[in-house]
Image 1 (cartoon, rainbow, N blue to C red):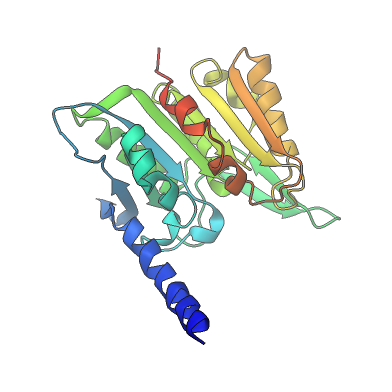
Image 2: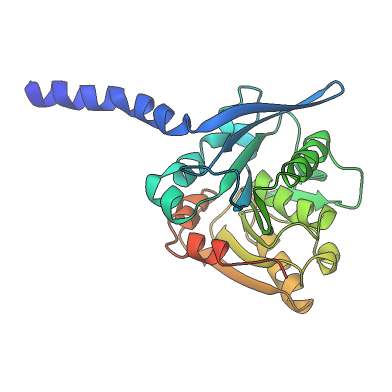
Length: 261
């Protein structure tokens, strides 16, 4: 009986512990006219405005859309907030939140006869409002003297992986490295940024939500344009390949070692 009570008490504490970990992310809003971008931002341990820090932008997936300014931290938020990560890889980390029924990237989604999702990407079109506001947020943040403009990174999962490729097209001179997870984009547009950004692309081989072919096409196109790209495909992973990507021991050492030329 004591064992059961102890287990129940431990389980009841998990959400509180998790929420406590995420309190390091300050709640913020970017308001432009009638539009609002909600986001969370985490500053380094012992933040010193006289020092310079890398900036990391992370774009969540479709399941974390909303207006609570919280759900976007579900995947990745706790990872960046770990004391070990914050101590060894000091950075400013931003998690914006995309509203319901909207997207980071300019895409069209359909179903084929097998029920698989088919995506059409058009980064050359007018940006979605969340993408437009996110770009404004990044550019506004870059004005701060404590940002190391040579170490600005972007990553995202699923819908956010697609947003990662698109923001690189729209802002090819800002980012030094990118880590899109189970995403995709337009191969015909990678020439604008392929040589300017270093990549580590991740996907699950069994992904039936965003087919791995979408990442493969982008990787092939980046290589064809002379870009620097690593590609990790997990043979047994489905759509949640971000779990494996976040567990990569070399992800943070790789990311934070890259400087913009």
